[in-house]
Length: 278
Image 1 (cartoon, rainbow, N blue to C red):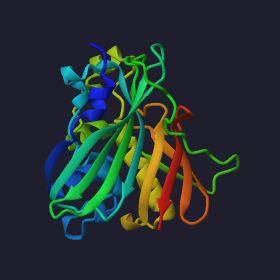
Image 2: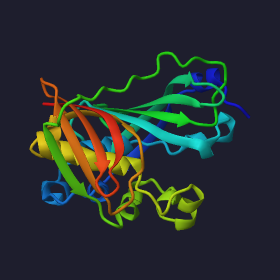
Image 3: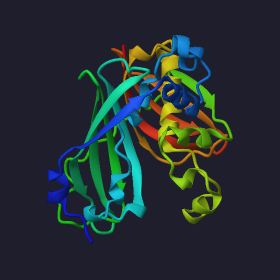
């Protein structure tokens, strides 16, 4: 079954309700390697901004057969998170997810889906907008156009203004998966081997969280309310235990460009990054 773009774009929003506990906020912070007490100790607890990317998550809905997607070939291509208010450390969370746009790159090249989730608390406060660009590698050629697809943020052609290096733990993926992403690719060696990897890989959104920590430390004095937006493109997986080096360029008025690489393999893992700070 091929995807029906008209049907996908006309789908009503998928609404997911979540009861967030302080334990969940702490577990997320541990999953992205945080060691600062303000992100781990319930008496002074503050939520990391990148946690918005997993709040109100509806699950991997692409596996639903009526959607017609070749879900085994789907990759998380890009992630954008815009913070409208500080994230709570506990309380009711409501996520409303919809497929905002589809871009056809051709039968041999696949398609892109832009999936947007609006996140509110139980009282209606708009907390964040999380937008993922999903690469549907096996679903191109449905007759659409590739025009209008997101354009990646350019990186300056000069030395970075700051470099922040953070390590990941050998069991990082095993901790991060407890925040809800139970894909066996991140824990089972045989599944990872079947997908072409030497061993289980770190979740992309865990890498995203580590990079968010680097931006917080380097440009926001570890004050979460000062990080307002973080966008970028996943370019290669990280293996748990590797070191992530984030290079940052100041672009004025609190705007940043950034890129991350794995030090051990000199491999770019996240690129065309763009952030806004206060």
